[in-house]
Length: 212
Image (cartoon, rainbow, N blue to C red; front, side, top):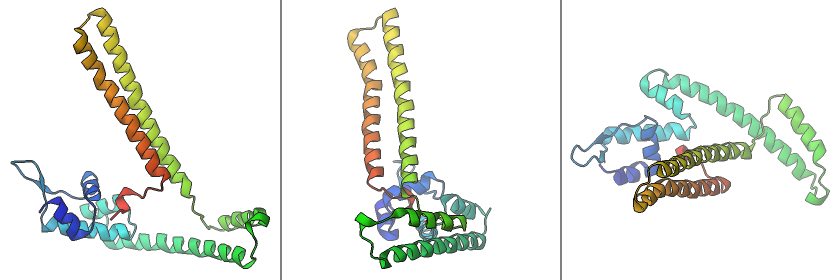
């Protein structure tokens, strides 16, 4: 079975299927002649189980432990139930605060946020957790930028080595230019990929593992 067929059968994108393979949750066989992945019914069943558990918001690491036998499904679900119930309580508290502001019918221009922010602090002290939707995006953006900067610095160092080597033992100009084009092209590709990644994150990209 080809990956396109699996995608249609299970309702998981090809990108996510490969993601689960990279995470070690799925191990399809490969055709010895062409190296292509070949999925069977066991793989399809495995993906359906992964889809179910991910839709229940179980982390990748816990699914991996369940598959390996290090964690019982019942224990994982019991723990997840506690997490979901806590989130449900937080959402109920947040909804209550929204209703309070709504009932008072205060227009934005005259809204006094201090009293509500103080109330939120009191709620947080009692255990309520409010969502911080920007923190995860900022973390991912910083990680992408850091990785790109490190790679670019390595490429710049490589270019410097090429130039130094050329001054010590000159190569034919064409060969030297070809050598330089490799790291320069890599730097440009990384910059383009970084800009696309930042655009995705700022556009509210979902977690890859949650896209079905």
